[in-house]
Image (cartoon, rainbow, N blue to C red; front, side, top):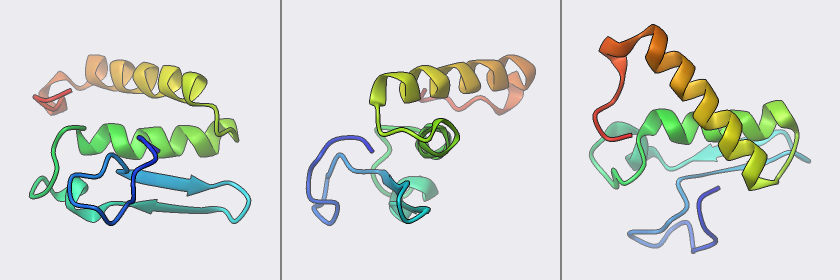
Length: 86
């Protein structure tokens, strides 16, 4: 989850959130379509929430490290698919 702002607020820093306890992830749809807030690439939002699940943690530092590693590895293997805003 990016930030602690109200997820319904326009311009909110919350692009996704995961509840490990309830095994549920919510993603801000407008951020995934490219039509809404595009400060964070959709692939990073999804990878970030998956890293929370994979690591089973709320700790942001290891989640961000794994997210960055996954995306770097992916973009290295598929440079033609790398987003322009990461």
